[in-house]
Length: 189
Image (cartoon, rainbow, N blue to C red):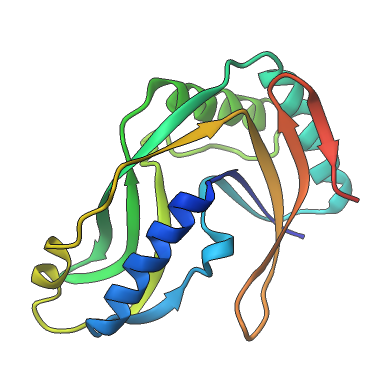
């Protein structure tokens, strides 16, 4: 199964994301837009994995962060990754947060320890992807600089491991395992 580890966001953030995506589309940006119900903060994209391996990984990761304190992060701005002069990904930015960084490091260390990954990017840039851009208007930077993002706080008390099934209508995400920092592992099977 195509697998990733993510933090869910609340309905307020989904609504902000939808409003911004609608604005960008009206301004001429074209691309693969994230459905509002799929908006999340990806911690690790792991690619194709066997179900048994995902189950084993979930147990190890959840044991590692059992007792991790609940925290929150704040969305604060609109940003983008570019290739050359072209925007490639437009996202909601997440304010620097030591607890989020620590969770990322703990999960990354456990993924390496059990050989689920060989390495992970230690330059973690937390963000919430809105779109992978295919076409964009001239002067695109000017067209996004006036878009304001209302700051919103997102509480975090768990992470989820998702499967992603690609379809012509877009990906379908289904959480497979949820690791609550206090209550432990829950499976969606």
